[in-house]
Image 1 (cartoon, rainbow, N blue to C red):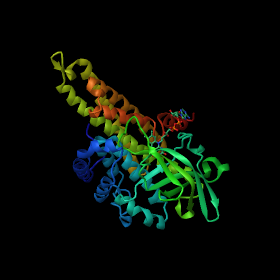
Image 2: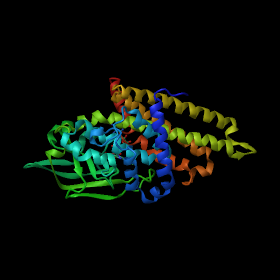
Image 3: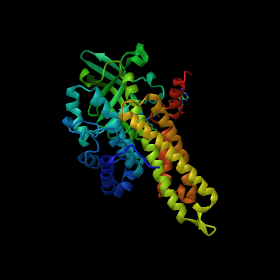
Image 4: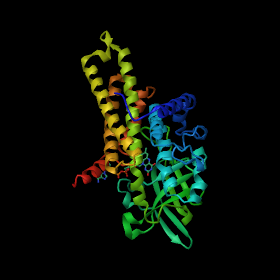
Length: 381
Ligand SMILES: Cc1cc2nc3c(=O)[nH]c(=O)nc-3n(C[C@H](O)[C@H](O)[C@H](O)COP(=O)(O)OP(=O)(O)OC[C@H]3O[C@@H](n4cnc5c(N)ncnc54)[C@H](O)[C@@H]3O)c2cc1C
């Protein structure tokens, strides 16, 4: 189905992203898996190409793309190559950057944004704690006032880019009695005394992303490191989570679509009982269903992207796009594994990695259950 949200400029940008990925990422894909991270040289190369600063104004060293569709194109193309690359770059550029650009003071923007755009500063966001992630308002990491400073104690877990991040956008409790209205966001530099990280977590998928637990023991920060307003962190997160969820939805669809197209090719070549396996009616019909499912999901997500560009994306619609695309991705990739037979279970086949990588999309950035909770509430339930 012909898509209608991207124009010539977006497609030219897509071309340049593809060339960058072919040149700088694909040849080294295996080494990223072995190291369980993307090396800093790759971040620098992406920064040089302007890929990390799409949402950052030129005045602060960014490439200041005119609308979110450029970020969407980048998300699609990186997802086709590696599920993990998209999550690492996405957290850095699409999730963390808007907080700095839209809520940061002039001093904060000058201090961090140029180096975020260049890849010199790598960002993470710390919301989830070992005690729970879905119930964000119940987070327990605290920042307690001590003279002119704040003293942070607590820990965060499952943090994408956590092992290598230089700057963590951290959600902490500043007013214990106020629950959701007592949370503040701080930008914590990894050089701070009292900050430490656990090992790279051993995950079922997304092998190349470095995911870690972070510890804060009497870490001292000042008001100059508060992002947004004191005690308004929960409200700020609610404001920016829809864009993060839309980014997930874009990636979920692009990732599954790419593997599905590769699977169609595979079923044309692989033979059983003297004929290509794709030509058995069962498989032909299955592939027809999967292609329809993906295109329907893509059309819905495209509509969300267009709404976001107009400034009209709602939290509830973003939740619909996130859970539905994650569910579709999961179903499509499971069938793709099945169509590959035993090879589908071998890590050397892209379909196997994709299937593993995709499992987390129903969990992170708000699980499918939490997305349905949000949608259910909008129905007055
Ligand atoms: C690879 C990876 C990367 C991640 N990256 C980051 C990151 O960069 N930053 C960050 O802050 N977090 C990150 N996360 C954390 C992620 O967002 C959380 O895992 C997620 O929000 C769920 O929280 P939880 O794991 O504590 O599960 P829990 O909150 O303990 O939930 C467990 C189960 O209960 C269900 N549940 C909870 N509440 C309800 C309810 N009201 N109704 C129905 N079901 C419910 C959940 O849906 C889930 O199925 C990452 C996680 C992973 C696995």
